[in-house]
Structure formats: C-alpha cells, structure tokens
Image (cartoon, rainbow, N blue to C red; front, top):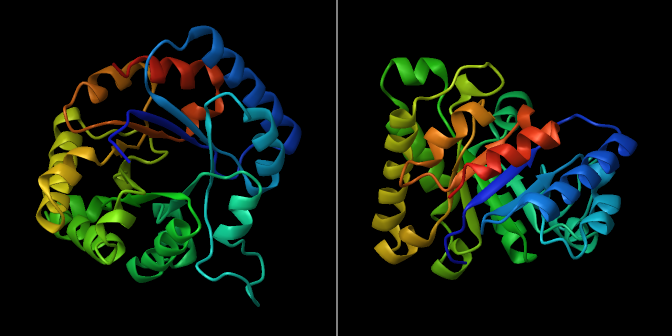
Length: 254
C-alpha cells in the first residue's frame, strides 16, 4: 500500500442509527460536490451503523472502518466482533489500540498486536494508534513509550503484512481536551515513527507508510499541522461529527 493522504473520522460512541445515516449522506454529498484533491476519506461509525453505512458508501470512494475488533475468529467473547465478521459487512479498515481502548478496556501492546494480525489476515487495513499521556510527555519518556507501542504492536509483522498498516499518533493529553500538540511537537513524533519503521523494515517502506495525527484537530488548525512533511492527514474525533468541519479539515490536505 503506497503512502496516502487520509482524513479519517472516529465517531466513537456517538450518533444513533438514523443520525449516522444522515451524517454519512451529508458527508457523501459534500465529498462529491466539493472534494477535488487526492486524499482518502474514511469514516468509523459505531458497530450498529456499519451495515447501512456500507450500503450508503458503495461507489463513493469513501472508506468504511470499524472502531475495534477481536483477534479470534469466533467463540465465547461476549460483546465482541471478529475481523472476518466486519469484512463481510463491507468494512475495510479497523482502529486498533486507540488510547480510550487502552485506558478503559485494558488493551496492551500485546493484545493490539494480535488484533492487527487478525485484521490483516482478513484483508482489513489496521489503523494502529499510539500516543503518550501528559505525565509521559512531562517526564520526557514519550520517545520510549512510542517506541514500545510501535515495536511491540507492529514489528511482529513481515513486510507484506506491514503494508496493510496506517499509523495514527494521538497524544493522549490532546484527545477531546481542546489542547493540541504544536505542529513542531507532532512533526517530531511523526518523523521519529518513520525512522523506527525505516530501521525495522526499510527507508522505502517507511516512505510509503501513512502516519496520521489525531488530537483536537479542527478546521482552524488543520492547515498548519498538515503542512508538516511527515504528517499525512488526520484521525479526527469530535470535528468529524459535523460534516462541514470534516470536509473543511480535508481541504487542508494538499
């Protein structure tokens, strides 16, 4: 998978089925009427909305993602969905390792690695999330934290498998807080991640890997962030719940 410019909307636990359908319809129309660039759009609605979203997005070029998956094919895992189940309803992407999953549901780099493997095995692209907490930022351990998240979560993949990975850097202290990493802070980590990938695989693979920034991205700060050479787009939270904001953020991608 070659390096792409991507704007992805993580809707989290928001929007009823009807509201999800309405938002997808609005986004679909705006992309058709206003989008002239080469960037890729992806939306990550709730599990409830995935089947109808797949039908609404058919033929639009907008990708459909799930917010989570289990690493097993099937079994006694109440409340979970497997990658193969997601694939069969039209899902193409899956988030793995979002900080809220790590914080509230105890996900570790090890379980994330299992999810990434399962997603790839079933033909999904894994959008693997990494990021440090405020305390890790303040005590200067964030490079070590990012390295562990990347190496333990992804570096068990071979080169072919790794081609099905997008990385999203989301500083935990900037998610839903209104705070935002400065462009220089974000670029520093994105460049560091790309160096880690180059060291593990190759410079060519690193150059082809899409690395997204997430954390209070809005239309008024997207342009400055997306101008950074190692930032290939955004994983957008709250702003993706408003079609106008989501499209305007995408317009900042050159």
